[in-house]
Length: 429
Image (cartoon, rainbow, N blue to C red; front, side):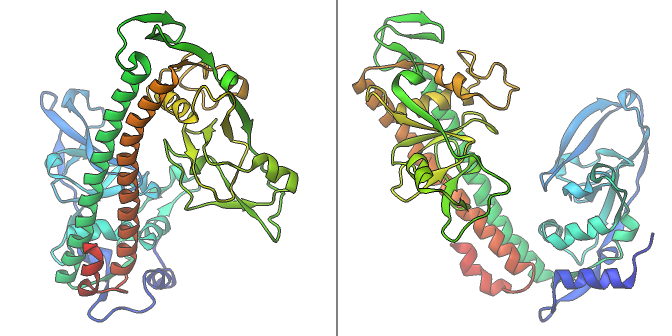
């Protein structure tokens, strides 16, 4: 199959309607060259093999194995800095730069390796590959019917053209985006470390308590002697949200509601709310109050957070709303119990049966057993964990800001809407 000039021109327009001053359109084939470095696999030699993670996940070491264990003997040599693309996972954005640790690794014919010419910066190519038009070029160069069986044809793809800034501008664009990526990676590492610390504190406080020396065995494990054991239904009123109807139309005065995706581990994200109509009776029934605990019954089972906003807000059927009934157990304490239960895989009392089940029923949730400390100890436990939550949420907000910044920078810099000098103050923020 060869691409028509019309298809090539259409994709150029998808990249840019008008070239910025000093930029030019270049064929992929002018900056990339298919490289085949055939190698004879030796049985007694150990080889590195790569894996390309989907969704721009990068390239990593898949495994090391002796040549005798490698069934496909037709292999070729990779070099650090090669541009590697999967033939059969291309529509899942499986491509990237070969890292230094995979220099002299070997790959099968399921991949295309390209040598990158000097007039395109490798890191710039990596960021360029995130553009929708880049993905479209890969899609147009693939043949097949089912997405999982589409085969990428590099010889067709090399004929596509893309916008190319001068080399010095490419390097500055890559440098700016790399600095944001470094900040994202550092923030992600802090979030992960805080998560591990919190999980350890959760485990200790919810099984050992504060200052206890005597413990008892219960059906959910060892807890302090002074603590009670209770079921959710003894202390809380639990209600599912409104059932969604695909046929329902949004009227003239829709109301916002929360769904599974809005409820994260310990926090609620309201950036992408949906709306639907609620009758006056439904509004009275499903309106959230500050302090209500929301628990996901599907997806990431048990994900939960407290609604602490006084704004009008409702919720859908996939969420359980938990409201204090007796005043003996705080919603916040139950939230921490659930966070420990589900994130530590401590699936007690038959709540979900096995780790593979993707939901739980209201009946199972109501019968969930959990430890009940005295009120003062509950408060101290909640205060300790809330301090960790504050750090986690601050870093999560920072991560959201960095991801938004990166998205905006990529949109502006890769199209020339903002030139390098214009973008520097934005990147520094």
